[in-house]
View 1 (tube, rainbow, N blue to C red):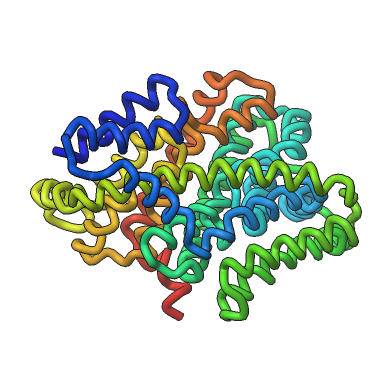
View 2: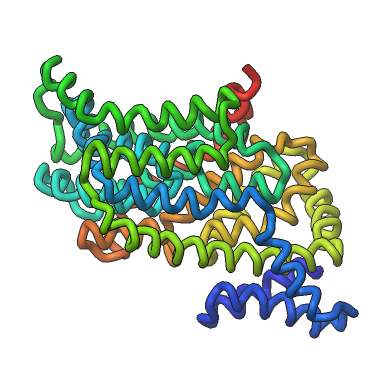
Length: 425
């Protein structure tokens, strides 16, 4: 089966330590050469260029720069202070504060790694002082940071919309309820952990005056997700325009209102955003070339026939997709994994009459989980560094949180209204 040959060659090259960009391009050229396909190599170049041409991809650097502004502009700090004032009295309160802060900050950053880094720098010292074990802090922070991928400014949603033709507006709205369900279940784990270990039995409930003061300080930051989500939902602006609105709003708040950064900080932030955007777009182009080969050789049709012989019902197909993506995520980062597999999975999802918006949420949540488990797990690497623990210790503490995320994945996969109720009303 050609699909296995392509993935086998790609994994062999990638696991040998070859950079991802070259792994994709060498796999494409290598399969053409090994199989003796009559395609000129110029076709790879042309498909690479066409992969990065679509106008909607202009939102990628805007999303990334908005995340830079929000990560360094004091917005995360005010969100954390507000959630601590409101929720800190609960058992496991600081853990719940971490989850809620990541959820709210994810609504304006759209990046799991930015979410983890921005919130982690503020909650790690407080949780450690309260007595939370540092491995658990790292694990919780990594998992909570992935909630950003289900929020309206999610970059994986943007890429899935580009690949599938699904509405980015609908994808952004479809992820909201799953994100809140995941946050609630993670919060319940925090309550259980706080009571079990005795590290956090809650603190005194804040007074109304303290809550009001925290709300006034965080109010402009809390309004931003409302503007973004409301603007997309109402159709006032497109998701691409929402990225630009986020940049402008972030500049106004960080430079003008909070004044946590200065104009002199902007060039460095732009440079970091440019570097990240460049990496993303290079990989998008390379996966475009491999996707062209997969399409030209009808690999999706071949794979669909095999899946149909194994999975006779949609639920069986979705189960296979979950297992496949979770395993793939152990070796490949989420965005390349989506770019690599979507051309194969989308025709099969349509053959099983699965709503593409719902399927996009399922795929994205699978890849969000992949962000936290080794050997790749970039979110876990960031959170472990912030918490100053080893990856091994953080991985052991990850188990109950990972089990909770698998439960959420199954709920999202098999209860379709969780994803679609907001876009059907």
